[in-house]
Length: 463
Image: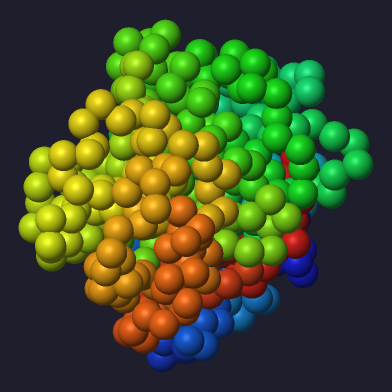
């Protein structure tokens, strides 16, 4: 079982020791709202910001953070007896709070911090068996399950996520029963599928997949892992067929085209569109974007199109206009650039063309892409660029982020030669990276991260 750095929280002191002055509580236990508190050190307030995103749980007092020693546990045990009314339960978002520290005299006397607290204040206590992660968007994820203390009988772990999404049982059942060359891991947002290998290093809760925000309506299925060969598509299809078609697919260190091919095939078999994120969903300026990760895991970028829809018998198309065309007048399935030209967002990049050229040219829209480059195609493949292309494109490329411009390739190649790098300087935009459990939740636009309750990287290894 994985344990946080520094071991599990210390046992709560006895009731006799919980008589300290009330003013002591302000230093260790800080109330963010009615029924929600943060305990332990949080020098930059990052844990409090992330905890504030947790939804209110009627009839439950929730405490999250780091229990660094007896002083913090004393703050918890001093405050809760006075605040927990009859019929009110407690949820401890504290790593190891539900982990048994030793055998008790009976199954009901589980020697764990949460069990001791439950007996002290005579109420139900929910606590994680092992580490707990604080995920962007308001989810507490306990990889080894939440345990309920206070009821008769041994408190066996139950759900993994709080609040629990409707798809949890289906996804976690698939994860437990997948074997062979394909590894299936439960993650907060859903399922992670990658090649099984004895030579690969174990995954860590610091991996960005554990920081993908949870969508209550559908699971995210991450395909691939940087540094490993792509998984067998046939094995992936078998797993996906066992899930609800509302799922969201996303590549992680594998070619985008591999996931698009899977989605298109599934769409044809299921008779309904399948959605694909062009990278790991992460948070930018309080909105979800997709951060595409390179096969070696060392580079990432945010493609113009964040989500794609794969419908039966049709090329993938972006869902909604990407930011790069914001403010341009819409024209059919494209956006007007001026001078008789439009730009059409595609799965592989941007297609700059006359309005009449796009009809019946799905062969162009289905150009393969590995998701590591942005292609700007001018006109039709094999045709020379039109006169005045430099002026035509200058306004468009000025809309790209620095990340996107660094990965831009033009087609045909003559376009790149004509531009010669002489385009107007673009206004700076924040670069977005996939967040991980090792980074602090952000109070600004660049994404919040998954956090364990100690406020530091666990270094734990998911099983």
